[in-house]
Image (cartoon, rainbow, N blue to C red; front, side, top):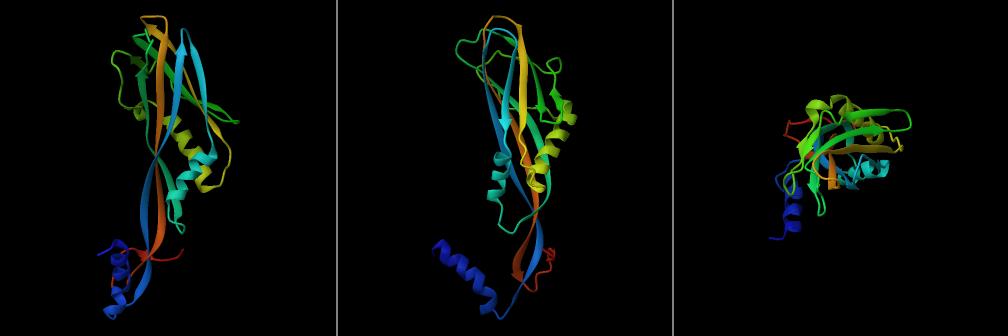
Length: 202
């Protein structure tokens, strides 16, 4: 049986069985990742900026149902992935980051808190939640305003650092990943004898 025909059969089952439908409100979550890549090739201290636009954040809403009502936005994790590239001679990196907008600048993590060994070829994402609670709170406020309050202001992710041990040329790709959870309500049509969910008020 084709998938389309199966869906049609499910939709008309209440009619065939003499039942009727009602709309009930349910809670759902959707997860999305925002990645920003910093390509570093420096022999001393570096300071790099990547702009996060409101359009990038609001694009996540395109994956939600049209009638979804967003109730909350959370930051599940903020993590960093460091990948040494060809030509790198540095074995240890001091790395810091901050979030910046037209109102203020707030440190996410400082170089003293986040020394990174560059021994292998590549490193998996390393979570930073335990040391950057304030930075995550600001990220959450910014992303909440963009998604829930139609704030169209951009903000910046800033990375800074310097080689700590070994070599004179730092060549790495640093990916900052923001894992976002969007919570929303949606009215879904169910059989009238199903008591799950809440009365639909949307």
